[in-house]
Amino acid sequence: MTRFDRKSRLLAACLSSLAGFVDALAFLKLGGFFVSFMSGNSTRLGVGLAQWSTNAGIAGGLIATFVVGVFFGSLAGAWAGPTADQPFWSSSPYCWSSRRRSAARAI
Image (tube, rainbow, N blue to C red; front, side):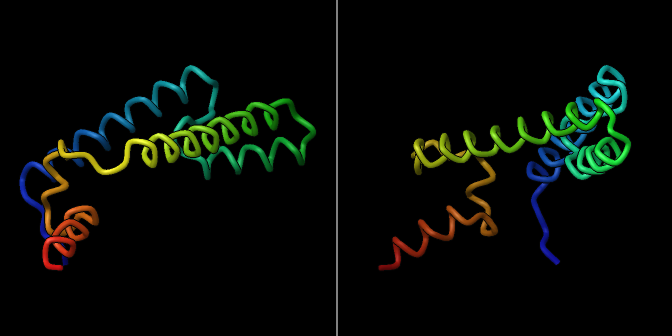
């Protein structure tokens, strides 16, 4: 079992709470669709297609928007590359970038 320090646990709790809050608000505002729960949207897409409902288009659009966001987020991360100002959790021994830098120093 991996143990994380207090800052990492607090960050995880804050981010998951924020994601849940945003998803709950969007669920209410969008009439039963999700902004961060893509398996729920894919279920709504399947039901909408089976029933020839316009809900299929809404669910499909949300899924497509999510995929485009992941794509551009990946491009932004690759473009930014490794930086000197890493967030505090990157100094964790469980973080990939921390292990990569440690391995590079050992060479």
